[in-house]
Length: 200
Image (cartoon, rainbow, N blue to C red; front, top):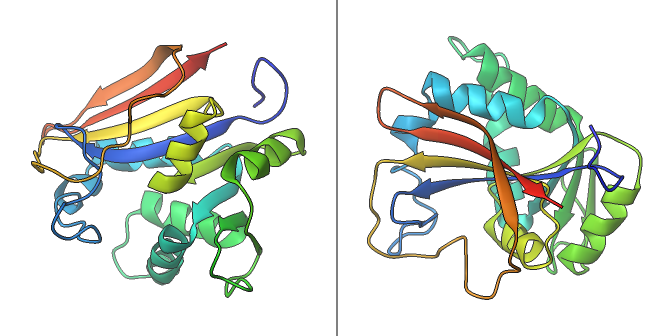
């Protein structure tokens, strides 16, 4: 699918608490507040809709290490939900672009590492052939793309948790703009899944 202005769509997705945070202030790598809701039907269907038209994953180094350390172990695991295995297979098989100033070479297959500005790499990817470019939960990448108005679709899972502090996804100074709500779903545990498309 292409954006209205030509080129590929950049789709960003982030899990947020209801007070707008994406990480625990005391332990940023602790995702225990996400786990009860990430395994719901609403969350799994939301994730599937993110990657099914994407042919590139755009990740920061920390997120790449976490994702590519965990998700391949899901493939073939006993009792795994087919939607989880689908995402895991997609992540392993798809083109991956990792932005890092510390990685000299990619330790993963089908992965290219760039030590360049996020916006510059994203513009080049959008101009190339392919499907959607998915940025799954890499906060630093998403923030940089939002700041340059390069996100075409924004996915969010909102969980009924307050973290009381920690980093926010939306910071002051973002470009003004209009977004259209294109889908929404609520789960039994109070989780919300939403997609917003940028109006250009």
